[in-house]
Length: 285
Image 1 (spheres, rainbow, N blue to C red):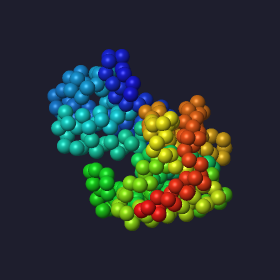
Image 2: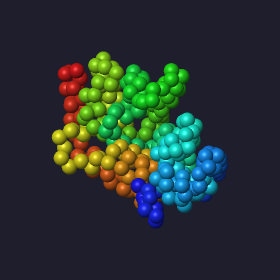
Image 3: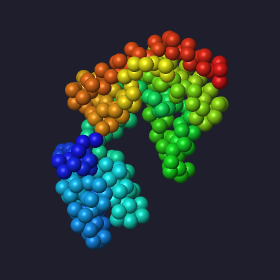
Image 4: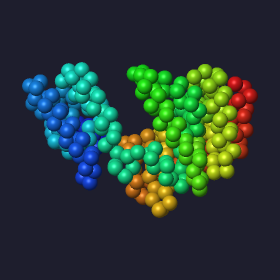
């Protein structure tokens, strides 16, 4: 996280001047935040102190010139006693915080000719069974409503149409070993999930590798990584531990993610050994 010249943490991200939709959303958000602050009788400087950010950054957010971080909206909601109305704006910010050309990685997966991904907390969404996905969503807090669960489950399963594409994209997955033993949804759900991994790994365009927990030199300690390559030679990627977790598309930034993912693959078990490892886990489950 960067720090502003006044010593406070950066309130958010720069706005893409060519993203007309994002600019409109940010302008509306800024007007609402300013109205809440003025109704509370607070000056921008006092509000900045209360939420832990500088006055200049507060004015940038209110002027629609800065994309606020989720924690900024949470603090603003608390300070202004908005009862969740300001915090609820985080959903809108989630849609505009990323560059417009890489805003929706799920859509980008649909046209990728090559994809590599490393996951450390749970099975990658493209590899999940419906039962595993539903059980995973049930662990999230605050809890989702039944309609929200149904919508999200349908959306995740729809992404798996990538396996039906022709010509088939080249897909590479590296899964942290702990994700293969954590019984999300119970033992039966885990068994079916492991069986599904073995089935998917038999596809000629899929390579599945396991990163063992006793690896000392681990390039994936920064979190998840995803790299997507497209037919026109361009690429996009995302990593929890790089570029503030934002999707990126510049060649220089993508190369950083490619380097890290390449090292991760080299450190993980080879595909054949990985399948043998999963089969052994299935036999013990």
